[in-house]
Length: 190
View 1 (cartoon, rainbow, N blue to C red):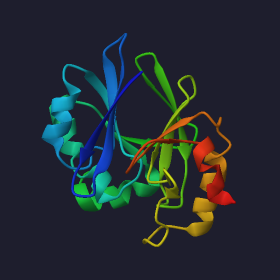
View 2 (tube, one colour):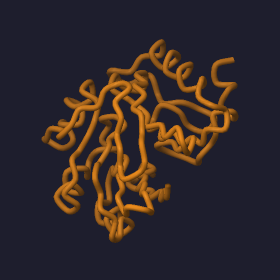
View 3 (cartoon, helix red, strand yellow):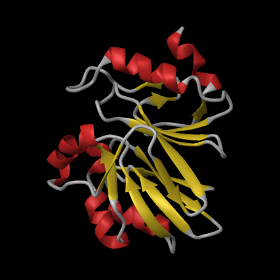
View 4 (cartoon, rainbow, N blue to C red):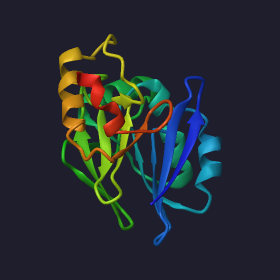
């Protein structure tokens, strides 16, 4: 699994381009702004999905422009689709739910619904590689804001408990900031 991180927009959202080297297939997570910057990093990959970890504008704004360029479906959780449409005036091609699987080439991801930052927040987990793409649920040393409309501190606490049960060596790729591990974030609930 190859992982490229591209910082996009004024909030420096981490957009991830993940690819399977064997098949040259990939997916884009949270393209945010700067679609041309993302497209230049995609290169000759065949993008099979554009995945939005939640509906906030800094993660979704260029999703449909990117879709037009790479001909890939846009995916989000049903609970955040309406929020996404405020920024894009469009609807997703596929709605993802907890425990759904997403296969790209030889890579397999499980959707982990993690409400708290937003009602439809979710993470993508690749068990084989022990990689978690956490959106704005979990950051290095922190977690997503819970003071926004539709957010919930109790839901966030439950979501963090769920994530902290993953193997400690799991590498966490957050929506903002640097990577971390589950082990390094165990103190968030103490």
